[in-house]
Amino acid sequence: MKDKHSQTMRIDIDPAALRDLDASEEDVSKSEHVPISGSNVVQKGERRDSETKYWRLLNSIYDAVLITELSGDIIEFNDRALDLFGVDEETLNRRNIMSLISGADESLLESIHINLEDRIYTLVEAHCIRQDTKTFPAEIAANRIEMNDGEQLCFLIRDVTVRKRTQEELEKAIDRLERLDRARTDFVYSVSHELRTPLTSMTYAITNMLRGVAGPVSDRAKDYLKLLDGDCKRLLGTVNDILDLRKIDTKTLKLARARLPFPRLVRRTLESIGARVDAKGLKLNLCTGKSTCFVDCDQHKMERVVLNLVDNALKFAPAEGEVSVFIEPDPGVENRVRLDVIDDGPGIPESSIDKVMDRYYTIGEQTSGTGLGLAISAEIVRAHGGEIKVISPPPGKEKGTLVRVSMPVIDAPTVLVVDDDRAILDLLEIQLFSQGYRILRAEDGKQGLDIIAEHKPDLVVLDMVMPDLEGTEVILKMKSDDQMRRIPIIVITGAHMGRAKFEILNNFGIPAVRKPWKEADLLDRIEGAFLGKAAFTM
Image (cartoon, rainbow, N blue to C red):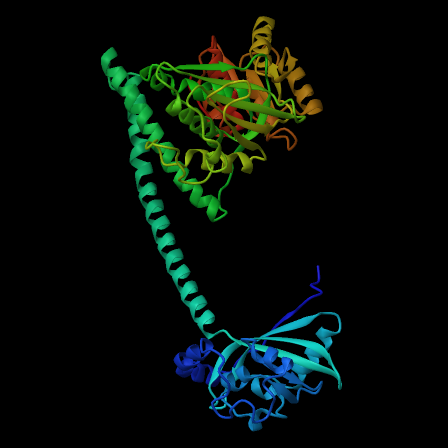
């Protein structure tokens, strides 16, 4: 919207004039604070009657006031103008005001006239020239006035040397702080980057030890290893938070999205911190009801959101306290799922509610943590098109905190299961349908290919041994067809797999599951297929 009151114009100053300005800063800055006492060249009363209201008003103004003809020729001025420009009355009288402004010419006066046609005044930022040719930065407000002898122009000129110097010093200080902040951020980023590799290795080693890869482990040793595993993962999460914040700031954060069942993602994430919850003597509840929904998300980043929110809740829960996690359709918005994390701790002061998602902000005497959990969670949620908010206390409670995440949901993927054994088909359908997948069935390889061609499922679960068309033949036909080749495949088999079949799976990156399978393993393979991960565990 156009400002009808003013327009600011700037006049560049030539380098020579700037050198004059540097040489005269001290003198000019002093003049800005000198009280009005009349010209030191011509005494008051020699040209004007200082007792009239007009001149008393004019001389009471701190700024230099110059009244000119429309042509810019000066006809009246106050004593401040004489002091500011270091001239006497005779020199200033009838002089054109453009000659007092460095770099100005008739085009500036013309622009001022044009601007004043639809504005009350025009503000010019320029450098003015003193009698001794030294310059000073000034703000010049120009407007039209009606006098007895016709229309004239009025210029109010203010010396802003001190302000400009202060502004420049402030800008330099801000620049120094920004450089220091960048250096600090770069240092933290570098340290975090260096920490991630050993932490990942430690987590991998601890996991293998818990699985017995390095030999039998006593129950007491397992308890210690689980605590170490939890601490390493928590520290690794903090490192990843810092690295991701850097990516967010530099707009380089990328999401490896995949369609995943949201309730299972949350449940699996909570299971990973079960030992930590037990060690604290707390209770962690998960309530998903019959909710089955899918979100298009980065699995690892969304898991970190859940971990950050639950870790925060556990941190503030009292001894023998309780943290509850709810997943349900968002009643306020269509096609969204809501994740609520509720603790029964002391709650958050009202004055801190709007700050808890700021980086490095911590509450009260709570010294653990970096103050990054909610901040990074909020950034990740927003990057997924979701929303996050904090409510304290939760509705209907006197204490505690509720952190609510609302995420957009997408259509469930369609999975085609192909097997000549109806009992296997029934079992697959039950297990996948319970997670919300849409199911198609085929009882042989040829029927499976026909369904794939017609319906283009999102994934195929395929038996390797069938009477009419073996699984390997179905795979080769799919991979040779432009319309089918990109559809992920998971193989299930109860027979020994020969080298030729294994090579086919390996070449196409197809994961395999042996009959009878564990439901969790099958679901992991399916999610891994959507994520583009192959696993050949047999």
